[in-house]
Amino acid sequence: MDTFASMTIFRRVVEAGSFSAVARETGLSQPTISKHVIALEERLGTRLLNRSTRQLNLTEAGKEHYEYCTRILDELAEAEASVGRGQSETAGTLRISMPIAFGRLQVLPHLWQFMAAYPELKLDLILDDHNTDLVKDGIDLVIRMGPMADSSLIAKPIGTCARVTVASPAYIARHGKPATLNDLKTHECLVFTLLATRNIWHFTGRKGDENVRVNGRFSTNSPDAVREAVLAGMGIAVVPLWLIDGCLEDGRLQTVLDDYIPIPMAVHAAYLDRRFVARKVRYFIEHLRNTLESTASNGSGPATAATR
Image (cartoon, rainbow, N blue to C red; front, side, top):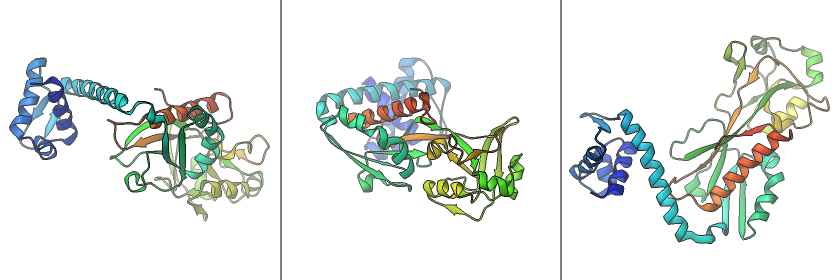
């Protein structure tokens, strides 16, 4: 049997979770699919899948071979697609969606470098704090903050954003500084509602990871509104450092609970299909990763790039 065909079917079986699902997807019979998997096992001299009437489970060898198959097949697909696409992949329009404040403060100041490098490429930037439907809206790439909940997307971690707990001098003068996480329960805390955790704040302290349920009369779906509210002395907030750039240096805000570090926020680049990632998408992901890395290293921003 053709080795690449068997590798492709084995990969599909693993990702679909059953022979019958792959049969429906491909139109092949279940015995044919089984023969391809058996052929791989015989060629390798080891079992790849533990089969039962209810489920399939990868063996240790199967896990290793699945990763190998995925890497080889993706590289083959990309090589073939690259020849077919040629240089036209750096022309046309690239549609990207990302959170409003992150795009405005972290991405736009550096975007000219990307556009200068690819003069034939047009960029359609959609700033939106809500989840975007890539298919419906014709989006090539979405940048998301925090955990990725949509399993239908291929998500690549490209960095993290450091966060701090802050309050204004006026608020601290009226209410004092909290000394422990438990003290936050008696303070006005400003809640950003688009985070999955909302009013449960997560920290790393001397005892490891800890969390606290906070209270407050003000909540909002806008990071910019959180910034203005904390500057106005309305309460305590956990914010990305880039959102309050300069506010700590000039004294408009002060950090509190310095022994407890808010868990950094992950930055993901997400797209639909791992097999045919357009060059313009890959190039922008690399540009954004480098941007996060450079802003972290020169002190102008807190984001750190994910390792490649």
